[in-house]
View 1 (cartoon, rainbow, N blue to C red):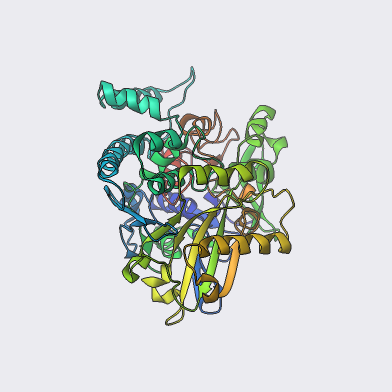
View 2 (cartoon, helix red, strand yellow):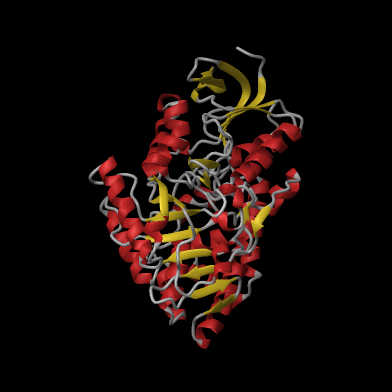
Length: 515
């Protein structure tokens, strides 16, 4: 048993590093324990073939909160800022959009797109204010601070004006399919926006709450997308450097086996190697199910709470495909400079919904949807000279495949995914020299995320704001004395934003805990 720490952070994902850095900056003695050899959780860069490296799961940066950057004085270099999106068409007549501008569509769609973006950004700006605050408690014992935050939310909604307020309240729980069909004639534009609304979720464009998920995506940097130099590990390393500079200790290859409970409170952790560390507080960056059901264990928490945690919806539904290429594939209708942009394969909203239908029954999509980038186009450190790497998010791929994940089912789906992309990139298969497919089951195993859900749970109205992860635990403190949650399963949710880690640290410091 070592000297007692003020706080032990379980997991060096980006939220855990943000939380640890802010606690250490406040003068606390902080230890961070990470199971893997790299910090960053699922936002890491690693080699998957000789000479080829790629961001393992998260591969683009679009939600990092300015408050986190400012508080920790982060300096994150990027090779591509404000990346555009190209919605691919098999006939080469692609739709391109970036910010509020769109091309490849009719004049009416151009006008509608600008209006759509203006409204969505305004609503996302409202949402953004509350992503960086602790959600108010909705109970009889709500504090003055809770009541003030709740009142402020109501006032901010009213400030939208009567028409926009009604529109916000109408849209927030709606599905994205109805909105894009009402607004746009272009199938490609409908499909691309639908994909952005469902990325990484177990939802289809017709599912309620998909406008909420779209707004959440926008609430980072108004939808601006960038590629960090060296991949996503550069973000994690910047956060780790900040934490160490502020005095935190970070240890990798230290998997926590259990959170130690003494006298009814969290008092430290024990690793799989049998080493124990004591602390006044334990802050878990793991997902809520792993934290409560595995590290704490159900017998140490009241039954009603464990029941709610058990029923959290955390079904991973997206895979990651990495391809080592001997050169850029040909994409008819795309200029070479445009390989720095983001590509999506989502021909229309019906296509995206049909892709989701298979996943409802434990099957992979017959025609998946894709978000694709070529990170080596601008960052030559990721592939040998003249070679390239492709990074693709493939949706929908269920965690619990009906047939079960095996070498056979994995190879079959990888083949299907490549064949689908080859409809838009005819020579793709001939360019491939190596590949890696990470299914949600692989993501669970390699990055210790229950269900392989990289957002640590669905972002829906019943798992958002006041009720994330569950009612009674939305303010980061768990119903076990000395235990806090700081990961994506807490408010506000997933994505490389750092908001959950920052909010948790602020709440811990505000609580007056005798650290």
